[in-house]
Image (cartoon, rainbow, N blue to C red; front, side, top):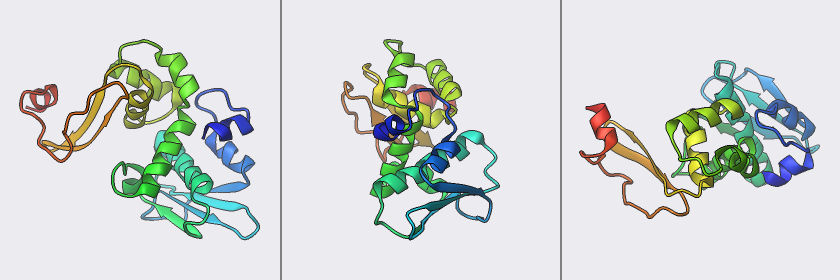
Length: 196
């Protein structure tokens, strides 16, 4: 993703990802999808068509969907001719290697390390910082939180949970691993106290 940003001289957050797709010879069209968030097809002439579900009203989700498909375009040229990506694919951080790669590509494209480091520097990670990043880079809170953990020099472990179970975890490079995955949220944790 960094090479793509350099190729098109993108140096600011919240750039128009649709314009980037157009510059890559990928036409972005609205509608024509019901169950998928986005769909990408490679044409024989080397150009592409990227459809975005018209029911996706969130600008941040739309931006991430387009960036995710650009990830498939750049990283998986021989995977399939046409590719549908659902909301589940856009939040897949542990099942499909291709979806994980496309999600990582999208996060790195929308929140490049060099811009993130300028914003977060040595600031202690917090939800206020995450919200600030999400707003400035026009991404979701989850994408901003994951990217902050990937970029920060602080010891941070991000844990996503639902219904008392840990869905996934992500640790910063300097943090020690704690085996949370597929376990119950510890009853003494801040999360358990807030939910209770």
